[in-house]
Length: 231
Image (spheres, rainbow, N blue to C red):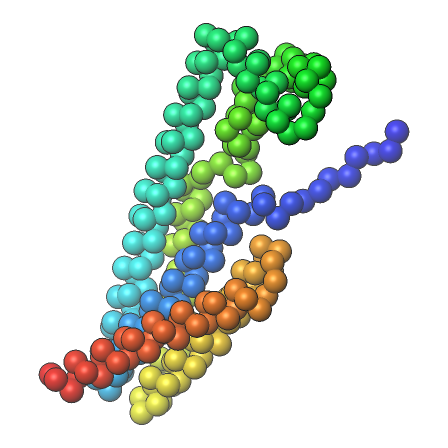
């Protein structure tokens, strides 16, 4: 008998990849936009750095809290469905067997064979079978609130640190354009990395994140310029 080979599927990364991509992109876009907006209103490097650092800290905490609450809600829903499924298996085993059989029939298995498969799988682990085939829940896509919160906070801070570093190094006179151009390049790199990590094409995600980053920075720069002149 030939030994089984282990396959690594990209879907197994979904738990942390979504939070990582969201955190890094949000950190770079929001902090760069904040820096550009403040720089357009005031040429003071001190004010720009204070605003950028405050944005990094506040954004990291906000991302962690938001991801934790959001993913916890998802986890609560999953737990409620699993608890109901466990209860139904205890109270209505035959009805649940019929339900599992019908799922396999709907997928193209012959009725007699579907019944046998359902019986054999139920005898081994009925709960796992129903969680997977009825609810679509498996271990690699289960909600993990702490993982999502920590990943988002860390990647937000990393993304936000990039425009802060550029703001430190760039000359004050051209700070707005320097930060904008450098951060658009950084967004393109992040988009490409996220696309590659997820196994998709690079061009479309890269253009998408770069475009919306440009829109965000242009909007805050315009607001900063208007407010700066008014004040």
